[in-house]
Length: 293
Length: 202
Image 1 (cartoon, each protein chain N blue to C red):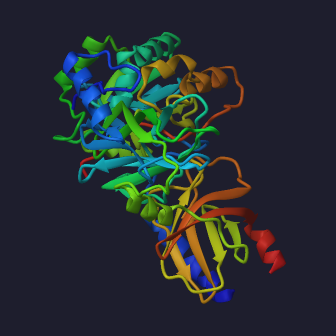
Image 2 (cartoon, one colour):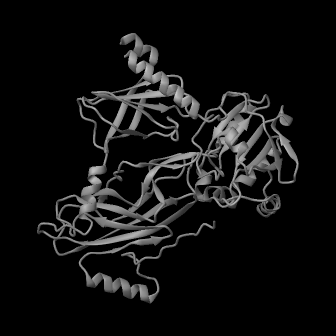
Image 3 (cartoon, rainbow over the protein chains, first blue to last red):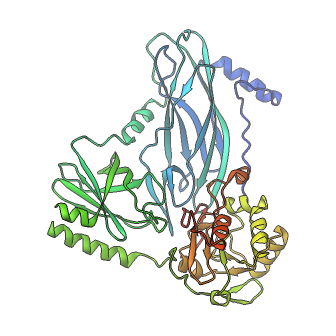
């Protein structure tokens, strides 16, 4: 399959110096609506720069994000892509004084592509980013936000792509109205991994070929899936055996073939009955554990 | 505790039975027989006494194209075969899948790309791929003169499709071959291979 080089020409705020029709379209867009956006349409996906609210409020953090709409069967990647692929990257083009934070990665799914196991997202995903505006924003002005986004979208085959997205938002002193994507932000916040409750006890036992991740959560959990944050620690494609107890859950994770040195911590995200939590567990050798228990 | 121990043992057994045999660094590399694009039978054991590089490839994969269209892979093949290393390119794409080639198509491609492996092995049934646990294209393996696997992993440390990254990359294959030929320990003997999935038939 030929790889197309994706040159997506958009009416970027600063450079509408393209064909006159594009210039006209940009000008029309600029004057026709207080907020406008320029999404990317590329093979197998659409990318859009979106915000939770329809305006920017002076002194408040702007909740923005990159919305990926994927064709059925195609996926993009989590921060640890698993056995292949790479996560999307973003390079912001913001007015002076604006600061963008890092992407907040929602809990991924397991995407089997035998013999590989990838970690990523299908259908639709929002990569949320907080943008800090400078002090002294004046109501009535319009703020142009833009970013260059790079991705690789895969099914059985992979296609790399890149393009520029843009979003222009008015500054308003009034209470912000929700944007059309407001509900998607709410849903995405629910899917972000939350810190593990302080009452939990996390530990990892290491045996010859297996790590056993134990989470003492204080209650019974039926389903669990672990996603490693670091590469080369577990065999991604190996099935994860889960043993549920009244107050704890144990997940068997096959060690990676690439793991030649012992590790001291296992970090990642665990999905427990659909809720995502951060995991950062110390690794204990089996004989130490037996000696202490 | 005892009950949990039993459960653990049972699940360990389950894991072992599911685990595919894959070549492991530090162990003896599995011997194989395969036919190359010139119809010649290639056996790993014939190359005892030499370093052997295995390179999984797929012409259509953007990660493979990064290294071929930039000339990086050809440069490595020439550099190391000139020093006596045996370089075997392997195509494990199944008929009908991306990257599948007939012998003639592979020879045309090698000529067009000015590629210089010792031989290109055709593995449409994926037997060699499964024997080594090849996951991606590219996926690189190095076998030392005594027949042990000394490297399993990526071609370099920049898991991208962008050829502009090659200049600033550490090439793990060259690094391992340099260190092994100098009798030094290999700094990165196992890394996460990056690329497209190998297009096995099953």
